[in-house]
Length: 161
Image (cartoon, rainbow, N blue to C red):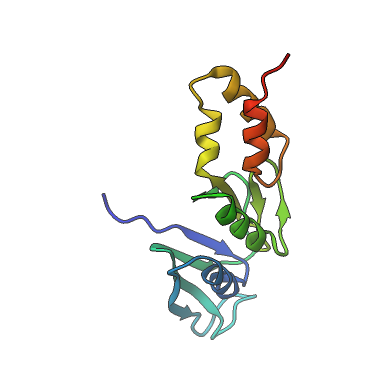
């Protein structure tokens, strides 16, 4: 399959966003930065950043300063599959700086990009072979913003009287 590189459309914040993201994820870097040339339509100006290529832990992205026409929505989000609670808390804390929390491990960062911070154990708990345990874990998760694995484990293991 050909390589797929997500392109994120920003309103003048492409370089700022790429630098923010590469400060959060390990093994990340900024690549090529292209700039607008002369005779650009407003509000673009010659020399402004057009695109930024960047890599987050091996995954390539492009950030494009395209203007205000297409804001981000929750219809597209990026899942971060975390090894444990500590890793999930790291990404949750850093990505919510200046952003906003949502439900069930979802958040919107300061640029409006939606992320899902998912400890992989959550998937095992909500898909447990015991349907009652899976349902209790799911119900606990639905009440949360930031995922709290210890609370979900307790809920999964609490059998109603």
